[in-house]
Length: 356
Image (tube, rainbow, N blue to C red):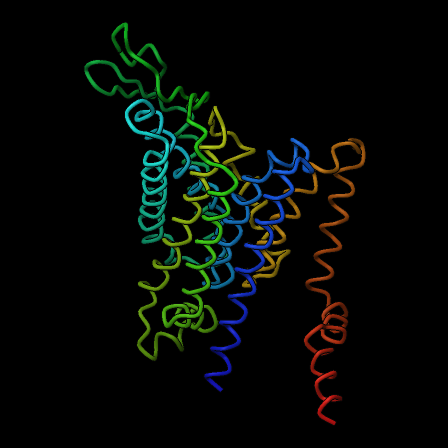
């Protein structure tokens, strides 16, 4: 029984990774042959970014079973930490090593934030945890919007008032300009790098879920008291899942920051709305279902852009698609229909007839 379960999880992992590889090859081929429009080409990196966000949040919401509404805050930490490093080292390092170091800095900064926030926050549950994580995301966004950083021959200068209060020399350069954010971030990310990072994210999360630590995390989700009674360290495994989830969100932030020339902490990209949208990807894709939440993120990111020609009706169509996906995933009748007409059941019946 145990061997069958391991084989099933391994097969599911390979299918999920295979989907990413096949999708990358198809989209890259279409892009190189000129079939894709410039609009869709510009969406390739954001598609991978939001897929990473959906997978990372599913680790907290689906696998750990804790509701977090501050995931965009971790993305913001990773984005600004990496963009600040890249702007500072723009003329000192070549693109490859610079982006690799920026990626490490963004991941570590976001993971450290997740660890520090998780120590007091993960003692809470349910709505209380959601409210506190939401507050964290808003605090991060607002802190970035009032932060001014400059550099001159004397080093770095910091202020939370305005540019003039930095007190720089004539040759000084503003690196972070409050609500205007960071300008001049090198566009080091591309679709290939984004696809590799999505592939890496899936490997990390799926291997964690199928590991001993992952089973302990799911045991905490299912019954905290029972898990604690058999010796599982609740705090340790909660912090592990939360920190890894935050670090992966920081990875998505690095991709996001290095795909833009100007990075600003606005409500639409790092605020409450973004956290809710990422949660929508997870809920519609199925809480705990890594593969389908990734696909839901791609579809729901791509759909509004493809419907731009239907300007008056695109949000109506988008809302209808959300409702249909919710009904298809969660309606009892829809679940019965999927089980009745599933490919797995069809193949099982076919194999039984052949044996007979």
